[in-house]
Length: 284
Ligand SMILES: *Cc1c(COP(=O)(O)O)cnc(C)c1O
Image (cartoon, rainbow, N blue to C red; front, top):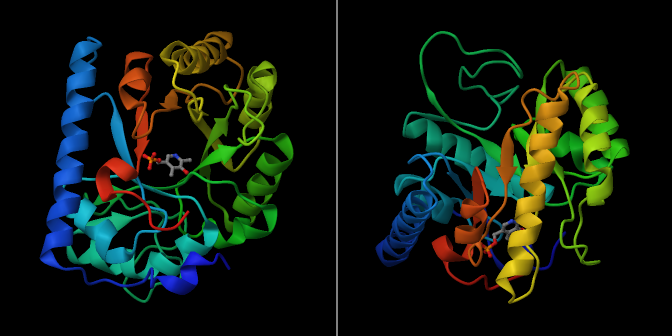
C-alpha cells in the first residue's frame, strides 16, 4: 500500500464546484494546447488523443475531467485501479459511457469479460495502465484495463499473454522504450525495441498497439526531441518490416505536461497529461 493512499480517499465521488471548475478549465486548456500544436505541426485536428494521467486523483476529480471532455484515462498503480474502478464504472454508466473492460461479474447487465458489445453503440472510455507492472499484479488490472502501456520486457509480455489467454481476452500493449537512457526510468533499451516488438507480436492474447516513452528529464529541447523522434523512427521501422502481429503498432504515446508540444511535433498520437489538468500533485 502506498503511503498517500492512507491520506486520501481515492474512491471519493463528491467534489465541490470550485474544484470541478478548476479541472474543467485544465482540460479545456490542454485540449487547446493540443489543437494548436497539431495545427502548428501541420497535423490533422484530432490526430492526437488526450489521456488524463489520474494517479493520486479521486473518482470525483476524474469524473470532472470526463465531464469536461476527457475520453481516455491512465493509471500508474494497480492498487489505484482496483480502488477506483467500481466508482468510475458506475459514474460513467450514469452518463452513458462504458469504462475500460466490461466488468466480468458486474451485476449491472454488463457483458462478460472479452464479450463484444454489438447491440448498440455505447461510447467507451478506454482505461490504460501507464505505470510499472509487477507480474503479481497482472490479475488485478486485466479485468479493468484495455491497454498496458508499460510493457518493457518479453518476460512481462509473456506473463500478461498467459493471463489474457486464461481469461479468453486480448489485451492491448505498448512497448515502453527508455529513449533518454536515464537510469531512473523504466523501458527497454532502444537498441532492442524492434526485436522485442516483433516477439510481442507473436504472442496470442496481446495486441501490440504501439510504443511509449517518457521524455528526457532535462531542459534542453533538442535532447527531449531526439528521444521522441527516435521513438517515431522505431515505430516506422517496425511497421515497414511488417513482421506478423506488428501491423497495429501505430500509436506513439509520448508527451506530458511540460513537453507535449515537442512530442506532437515529433508525431505523438497520445499525450499523457496530469498536472496541466488537475494541478500539482500533493502526493508523489
Ligand atoms: C504522471 C505521469 C504522466 C503525467 O505527468 P504530468 O507531468 O503530471 O503531466 C505521464 N506519464 C506517466 C507514465 C506518468 O507517470
